[in-house]
Image (cartoon, rainbow, N blue to C red; front, side):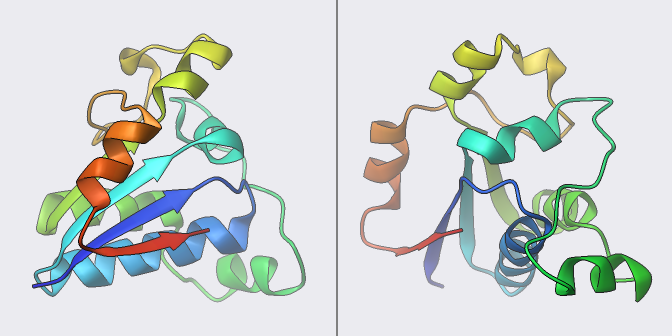
Length: 128
């Protein structure tokens, strides 16, 4: 099965949702999936941070109104039911002064960008 590596840097509802949908579908169908969370995306995975990220347009609110599974749930399912790894950016964790214990369940160890890109070699790389 193909290897899919996703880089999440956006804090927009739509981009986090799309990354989660790709991760959950790909892992459920047998792909090896790694998701690297950096920049603005990281803040939404700190325990207790339950606010919805801002939308880029009118589609974001539709996701919630129409009962689409939330992105956090989809990411969690990609780990539980597939072969997905959720990797927090070590630099961002240092800048935000958060520890591994501060993150939602399912996250792997803090990872540097160079390590993530090395692991992503020979696979498909998606940036959102």
